[in-house]
Image 1 (cartoon, rainbow, N blue to C red):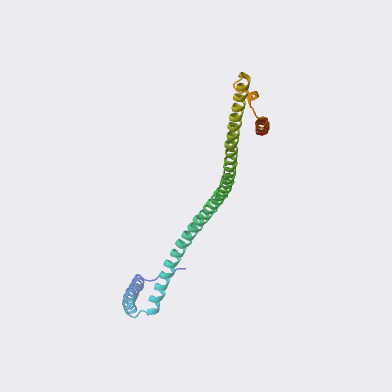
Image 2: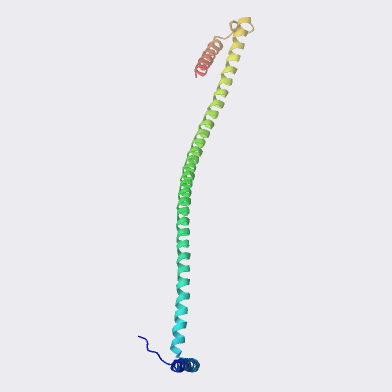
Length: 183
């Protein structure tokens, strides 16, 4: 199958292959330097845009996580605010109830004070009437005691008119005393 070729041909072929490979690598190195100098500016722009896109995507994902965290904290804050609002409204209701109770108690206190003032006035008037009646009773008692002891003797009065006037006065005074004592 294999044909036998002389060693020289093999060496020439290997040398030619090696020589071609060296020329290709030299020409590609020269071409690459030349290509680098003639680079298309659009390629640079595309690379810049791709880099910017990668940066924007990473920033976007960071922003999304920040937004999610902020939304969670906003939900917690909203719940806390609602709880505080409920507590505040309950406290305001209690304050309003206490204020109305206070107003009612102030009105009742004023009514009781006015009633107490009226009763005190009535009590003072009653005490004055009682003293008056006691004074009249003591005078009547003294008169009765004097009559009983004989210090006052109406039988020695010379005029009958004076007797009639004195009897009428005594009757009027005793009637007044009885009406005052009963009131």
